Image (cartoon, rainbow, N blue to C red; front, side, top):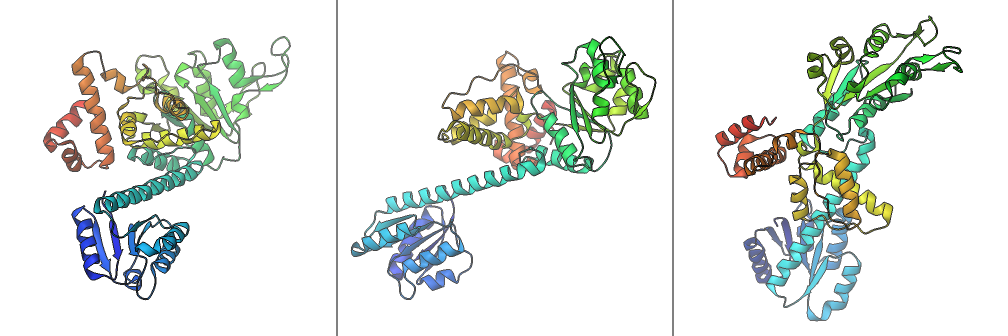
Length: 439
């Protein structure tokens, strides 16, 4: 593990030998004869190793000054035989560890590596906490991948408009979160957000629920506004709009074109002030070609389009989201969160996640409870569409996932990705083209 280390030791020979040993282990090292010289050298390094007895400022004072500048900078104390009690005091004051002279070099290197890993772990926790803190400001859309950044930029731009929007993506990718983020970031944020699940409404009730009715429209009917009126001043979300009955589509089209609605049982036009967001797990453009969805309604709804990438295309966001959901579950159940080690991270990154974020959240909760991750089930999605039963198909699907993940880590730089994968850049480009991977 690399890192920048400052060695503070007034014994020149000892200082030089310690610096040589750390340099040979792969660390960048600077040696100083006094604490003042080390403190005046600029920003603190990743780790400080200091003798307890020094001319001028003591090792204790060096520790205190380092803690004031950077409370997260680990400090390892080196003590003589008679200074152990002072070293214990230094530990209580925040020192990472102490070693008594003469010390074993291999033991020192182990202490250094452990301290640097602990610092890296704390930094990662802080980064995750910062990400999670910012989640609410981004509508609950957590992630740092290029796909997520592009989605956040699209939301920020489109939320300032009143264009009707179609959001497409596989099941479980968070389309409703995107719709809510668009609403919350718009001038309509103070208005209602009304969601209609088009797949759940029976066809004979659809018209009543959407357009409303007046008293006497049918036996026992009283005045009731429909979802269109209920969303006035805010946003109407048509979830799974591809499931909307064919008989309702022309009526909805007319209402959206004129921004007026007629309740069932009357002839009066009622004005609508709504922003419409439609979500679909199918390709609506393709559905217009076979007539299963009206083309004119699609173009009315699709003033703008947002495609939400599947989880498998979001690289290291997978680990970030898994950590987030696991931590929430552990807190909810009063459990200590198990370590998400390197092997677990690789396992998470290689999984196809056909259920996307919904599947990942369930897996994270099982992990927090100490249960094994279930096998990834069948579902919708491009990954499983290309991953068949034959060995060749499984190898191709695995290769495509590895290339996507590596490109994500390399921020789309194909030259760096090719080096990381150990293949020629031309070969990588051929595979990108073959698998239809977007760079």
